Image (cartoon, rainbow, N blue to C red):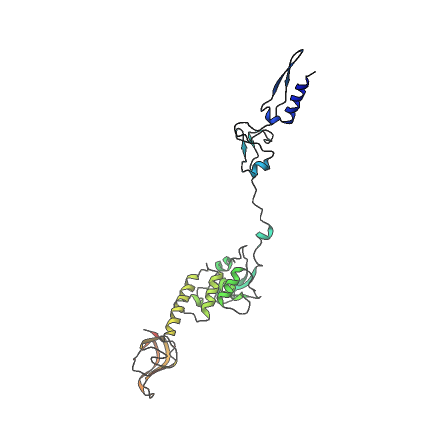
Length: 313
């Protein structure tokens, strides 16, 4: 039987194992009748030292920014090392969320378009224009078939961000982008927008830009952009009075003096006039590849009929 002071010592060890042992405490008790050796079980304590650190749980260690705790590091103890591999409170790796079916779904329902594929408009087929989850439509099928003329049999309300941008760029007002889809689907080598030297009107320029927004990689996108570039240059010339068609124009106000030409004319008549409408010079051309006239600053007016568009020479 232990002495009373020994019972008190053992009770203190049980209450505070951290202060008494790391790998096991051996308490020697001397009794009156002889020597009694008591071996206490190994305590689960943090590694000791001048600045010992102890964590009650891995949550506490994580809040302190100490995870993971490796053997020999402050705060490591076997009670937190569940798999006993020398590393406790391993950092948790969170896997990225798995995309839902809604996130992977197309941005809009497919668009169905019918196109002719021959110059005689006798052969053709139907094409399904699907979009990816970013709203980009694919026209690969009609492009590879060299579709000549296409038509959508239903209204296509702008739904995706790309469609809304194309609709706004085209300056449409009817709430329908079906026309842009048909323009994009066609891959006609004789398409007017892609023809050499084509210049678009003020109404056509926004429509071409709208199509370029919807299908920027169209096989004829380069020709479309050149047409828009020429058209903008022509618009500036028209504003400057250096491009004009048939009619009567005041020199210096409506048109600028200079040398102008028209091409591929049939039945073209022009005349330069004085202030009293007298004819300074005139000419009637039944047919010609090119007609040229020089309008002088002293001319009062210029009149043309059946000639077409006059452009700077």
